[in-house]
Image 1: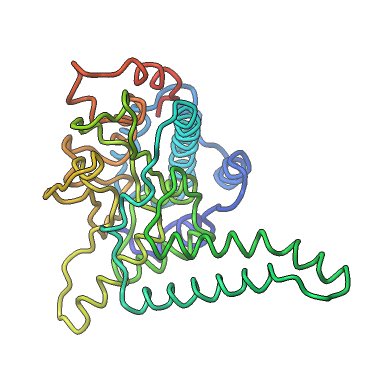
Image 2 (image 1 turned 45 degrees about the vertical axis):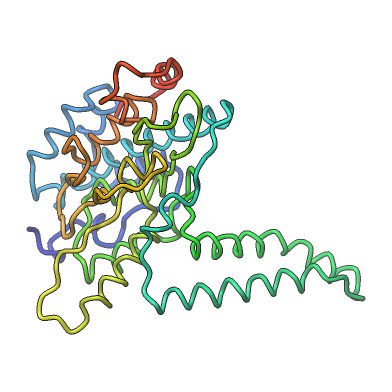
Length: 332
């Protein structure tokens, strides 16, 4: 494993976030001078480029390869985000009923985090109520209150959703993911580059829901789900509390998705999908996923089946709508 101090500055502290995708790629191109693997990737050598990057091993963390590897990862996840946006829009049009609380029973929080969220949720609701009360104030002050209210309500919604373990169909990346990566990696170990790029570009995804054609009762269609970064951080904090004072802690299992049966609306004793940390790699295996795939290949499978990779196991029962959805997907 490459020591952190030897890694490219683009890995350690200049990870490009909160910028338009093309700006991110241009920044990496200027840093490296050229991005040959990225250029091949966008030209259509999707799997070949990922295979070559994987074969480079630890070199992906070092200059001059790091910028090229990052560009490929970010381009991959930009395409994944585009696919998810297409899927969410299409599913809403079809009357698909999303299940925002499907992951709530799996969302681990320390007692301290639970109490912190409860306090902020309560304070947010009090603030909203006070701002909605009519007051005899100068017109400009009342206008300022009304201008601030939507942002206050959005913040309150974020606290409430975090408290309840809600994952929306597409939950944007957390603010400043690089600092979140450091807060996770410090106790638990490195995240794969693929998941770093995912959480910088896409965020959390939850396509679990019900629909008479796409997700009928009894079919484990395994809708795409990737837990948001705040869920990962909460899990790390709970894991630290669980093993406080222990000489050795078991590896942290980074949450990815509930098992297929839970997504189908019933109890399922199978473990959730996870990635074990530390994993200072390009990509990592999604453990407990039935095909034993690495994360990027898991995404490929999901998009090949219109966001419902479980149909790979039920090919005799594939709805026509899945075919229409898969035709709109960009290849990874």
